[in-house]
Amino acid sequence: MNFISLQSGSNGNCIYVESGSIKLLFDAGISGKQASERLSQSGRDITKVDALIISHDHSDHVKCAGIYQRKFGALLCITEKTLRAARSSHDLGKIDCVEHFKSGGTMQFGHVKVETIATPHDGADGVSFIVDDGCSRLGIFTDLGHVYSDLKNAVQSVDAALIESNYDPVMLQRGPYPPFLKKRITGPGGHISNIESAELIAQYGSRLRWVCIGHLSAENNTPELALNAHAKINPSMICHLADRYSAGDVLTL
Image (cartoon, rainbow, N blue to C red; front, side, top):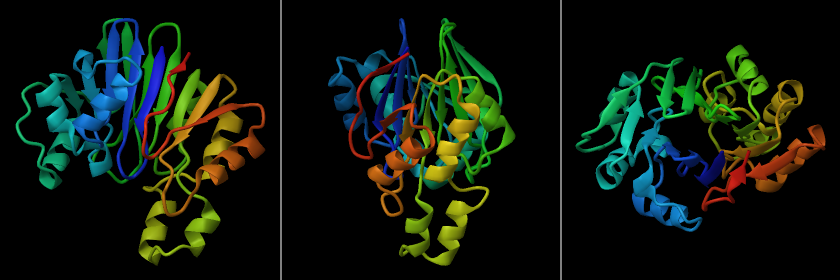
């Protein structure tokens, strides 16, 4: 199984995963042109993608979903609640090929299963994902709200993961955000911090071969702070970084 983060952060998210002939995109928060060009850098063709799977209705994850479906012809997989919420706040345009899944359910694409796990993040019907090709299990864990029991179980079950490491608590506390926004970020429907992310891996990630930390805040985090927090708590873990503005390397498991 191969994994590429095409972009990760509040300015837009898109993840590519392939196993054999099955090619999947997760989220559509960057333009179709950006996604296509960044995939082509590693020799991939976006028009060969089998499905686009959406995690939740926030703009940095769904705003370009209609364009991806119309331009590249991928099946759009999304919960009914998420699609309704997305249409109410974004102009997705005409979408011809949609398949609804239920939060907590499993989708099948050839030999690849995609398990969905409900999250307490403050979207309409948010989920995270586990991609299982029968040999390896990859977690895609962002916009998590807080550390909860199903997330712990999911981390225990995967061989590698993209996991959010959104903010440094000191930067957030001292930063310019108004109190209500700081409360939202640290609250049960917000995001998890560098320390929470690293401790989650330390306690439940004994099976992990590598992690890729992502969804870093531009205002309340830095790559150095995030990587240092993870290295301090998990010094032997191979830790990659998903960039806010560009595609990462092809990671394999």
